[in-house]
Every structure is written in structure tokens, then in C-alpha cells.
Image (cartoon, rainbow, N blue to C red):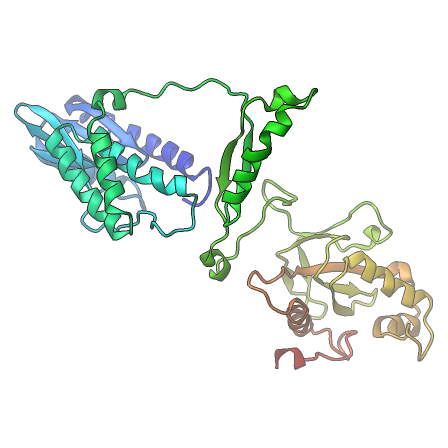
Length: 408
């Protein structure tokens, strides 16, 4: 569930399924209690086992891709991280862990705020205390947790102290929902955690009284700040091949658009070839584009089209409008054997086209490599691929040649 809305969508989807498949007759009469967490369901069933199995089989036939697995028992059942048992005429609970689960507790040597590392064992032991309904159950769970924390490098002495501290806590009090604390006037100092964070925190605390003595703003700094840290960059973040997409400057928050769009602020806007696709200049084949671009987009592969249908493919690291203006300037000021003597300008002069007839479109935007590399070399390679794809090399097109040296 990589998307932020994925759990909510899954919840709504399963809610619709459970009403159609489970919470209906003839099964509803046997259901004494029904609990669900996203796609994990716990049912207290008071009826024949055949009817329960029939409900599950019917549910598996009702949907093409969603399938349900079931476990049933008269004595013991596991739901999420809780094992539920019938014992002495009542229900008792213990901490449950799947046999195949890995020990994925945060390592003690991990580069995190020490307060975070200190809080993890206590939080896990408090969780065990809440789940285990007996002292024996908590003792067994705490022993298992201690072993797992020791494997992850946590000091044995600290773990023993935490076990004793949590053991003395009242389970009934822990099960009570926490009261929401009121608003505080303390400022929060937020930064990314690194090796200098401890020194920065010490300096801020040391000189905070100076702010409190200010005649005008002293009241704002009456209480010392809280320190909150974001996760710092790790070696994995540096070496991992998965690129992290920055969506902060995303133009479209909904369905992204494809094609070239005017910026409405330059004289290149009126010569754009609009639409999410382009036709092959010779075969007429429709080629779908995948990028969104405007006149201001940089690091692109673009195509120029003349009235007779021939195409020129180029690349630029600057804004595409800057490059288009240069092409138009060369056409207007064309002279043989000068800097204006380019393939496009020469063609327009030979066949007597007008500069206003020049049309253009962005074929592809080339993002900067996430792990480094020669961005310009990648642009040259993509340019060569598009020249080949559109057959824009002479004599069919306006490119003088398709240079493949960038692949060597």
C-alpha cells in the first residue's frame, strides 16, 4: 500500500464485500461477534462448521481476484498480533507472532535519535503488557521480546530495567484511551537528524534565556522549545537504485496531462503542435507521447515541422522556447556559410517557407539521473533514438545525420 489513500480504499472495498458476502442471511444468524481490521476478519461463530465453510467457499466464488483463507478452532485462534484462548470458562489473550516473521526491530546501531532508540523497547513491552491478560503471558512475551532486542544489539541491563518498570504498571490503566493533551505554547524546533543535532540542541538550550530577556518578544519564548527530528539520509538512501520522486513541484495534482502546452508568456506559444500524440512524417503512424511540457521546460527532445511535412529532431538543456527562438532567428537572418546556415534555416530559404509556418512540439522530457551520470549524454542518446524513430535524417528529414557516437 504505497499510496496514502490505499488503506482507505482497501477498507471501503472490503466493507462492500463483507456486506454482500458475510453480513447477510443465512449466515448472519450464526454470527455472535464480527470484527475487522482492513482485510483481517475475526468472527465468533455459533453454528454448524459446515455453514461456516460454505460461507467462505461462496465468498471465494463471488469475486475473480479476491480470495479468502480461513482458520477455525474451538479453543485457540490468532487475530493480528493477539492469540485468543478459551480457558477456565473465559477468554484469555497473549501476544502472538507468526513463526515466519523476521526480527525487523530497529537495530540499536541505527542512526536515529537516541531518545527514539530508548523509547522503542518500552513501547514494545507496554504493548505486550496490554495484550497479555495474565502475568504468565506477559512473562513469556517479555522473554521473547528481550531475546529479539538482544539480537538487535540492545544492552541487556537496559532491557531488564524496562521489563521491571512495565511489569509494575497497571494493565487496566494502560488499556484506557489516552486523554488528548491541550494545546501548548511551546515552540517546536524541527530539523533533520544528523551527527550535529546533539550540539545544535545544546546550543539552543544554552542561549534560549537570551531570547527570554527580550522586552518585546520575550513572552513568546517563555518556555524552552521541543526538539523534533526528521529521518536523516542513510547510506541506503544514497546507494539504493530506487529514485525518490519529488512531487512538491507537480503541476497537476489530479490526472497528469500529456503533450506540449503554451506558457502564455512568449511568442513561441502560437506555433505549438498541440495534442498528446504526433504523426510519423512519412508513414502517418500515430506515436503517443508520455511527457508534459511547456515553452519553459528544459532538458527536452523536441521536433520542428515545416509546411512540407519534413521534421527536424533536436535536444536542448535550456528552456525549449529559447531554442525555438534561435531557430526562428536563423530562418529570418539566413546567410550561407554563417552561423545561421543550419539545416532548418537552409531548407526554409530553399523552398521559400515563411518563419510563421514553423511548428514545434516536445517529444520527451529527460529527467536528471537519480544516481548521477552525464545528463547531456542521455539527451544525445534520446535524440538519436527519436531521429531514427521519425526517419528525420537526410534525405527524408531535416537532420543532416543520425550520430550514434554517443552510444560508444
